[in-house]
Image (tube, rainbow, N blue to C red; front, side):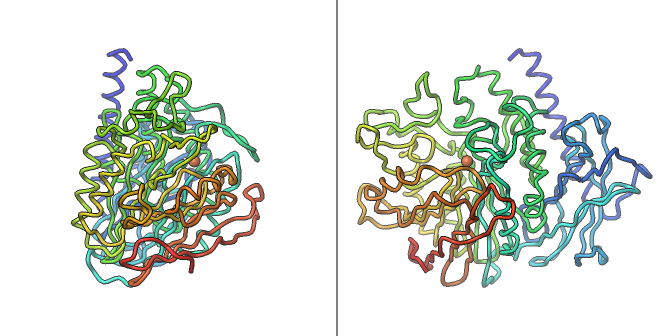
Length: 525
Ligand SMILES: [Fe+2]
């Protein structure tokens, strides 16, 4: 990277951050004024839908992006465009309780992120965007959270991950909306940068590298109606995995040893496009090639959700080679795997996560986690004991630190909800994975993928006798988790779709597992 480039780019990002902050500040005023009386677009400007995120006691984030032609940014002028937002108490938007004006900035792909504040807690709302004198967006639903610590009897949330556009239709989201969750957690692989597997449709181009290419890829995914309906249904919490940038990348190292400076630039482009397309707060505006994504949300006295970022700050993959810079199965001969200094979360995030354990006031403490946390003891082709380096199995000392902190804190009912592996798993997180009779300190529920092809069933089923803490595994169905948290138990329904190649596919379930409060591990209902 030349210094000239870095200066320009940093300057651009700083300005983008400042502009976004200004947009957020200006959007707080009710009764916004249209600075442009009327604006005509070449096509419907709200083609990518609406979204809400991160509900708190007095508000939530609402998002849209002006995109008359999302694959041709020259369809919009390189200027700031005012957008009106409205919050109503009814689904027909008649009883409007808040209104304001936000600015869609060209530097952020004309995305709009409004942090709505000042609403009473525990209420249902509807929202929409309008351009002055012209079109209105779809109407989305959102709600304010119950105050932290306030009594809450029930909370329903869904967990999704891994939606390869080419491998299937996102019909699972239509069933998810019918299931009526109050919150959707997305645990990564929201887009895929690469093509693989059986395909029912094609991406818009080759692997994205530039900001415009990542924007285009996000727009392609966001153009899927089922996904738009799920975003409009309720607030989301999001974190990413690898494919939002590049398969199996680790912090600032690419899988295929791409030139380091080029990869820094590529990752920053991918992060910015991610921010531009998600209902995220101003704290997530990318700064100096980094983006703060981890955060904690609490709903009454019942549920807390810590969304963690397993990609941005991790140590490089253990024993990576010039042939394979990404994930691989390594054996005990890989000394680097067991080094105590290895980190999955980075020091700051790990301290933030583990430091929050003792302070939680919630009965159920969910950790939204990109990749498998539990030990998964595999067999290599030669029959040797092995571990996959790209998930928490590649960071055993970091996992041990988190387990120790969980056990010490006595935080009630920790539940990891996990993506990445395109299969359903129900696991007990053991205090000592080498000793199957050691105490369970948490439960792990792994969601299957929305569309991405599952891991080979027979190969992984063969590992189960060596992993007695795994209570359920199935990679043959795509789907999501539907979780009902109550005062006595948390129920997890393993929801499925029959065939992602069929846009009208039927739904089903692999069953419901119950975690009793105070008793880590899950039993089939
Ligand atoms: Fe995936």
